[in-house]
Length: 146
Image (cartoon, rainbow, N blue to C red):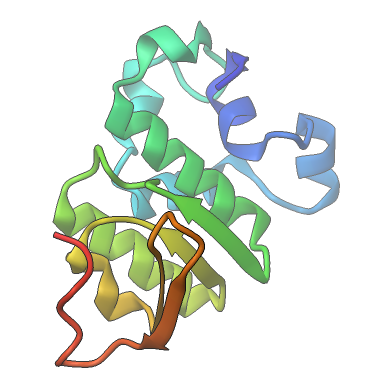
């Protein structure tokens, strides 16, 4: 999180000018905030132009959801997510992962949550001693996660 506007948090590292050149408007950012269930931030923090020290203003879960809104803004082909929803409820986590699938973002996720398995097809397990296993996730996969 950077000191700046709410808009800055979503579009980073783009500038407001970059955003305009891409044809993206604040209404589009509001749609992204809706996908991560943070639309209330616009009113609470004085609109998209309110300047804050976001590290102090946002909760852990809100920071994680802003990071996901940023991911949705940039629409990469691939994303590596490391415990990116550990402070987010399972239902909101589900909405965000479903949107990644809908948006065509291929995910590599580091997590201990079994609830995320349904959004992935394979599991790479590294044992910390140099060995690993890589296998499809199916209804019999049960040895990893919690």
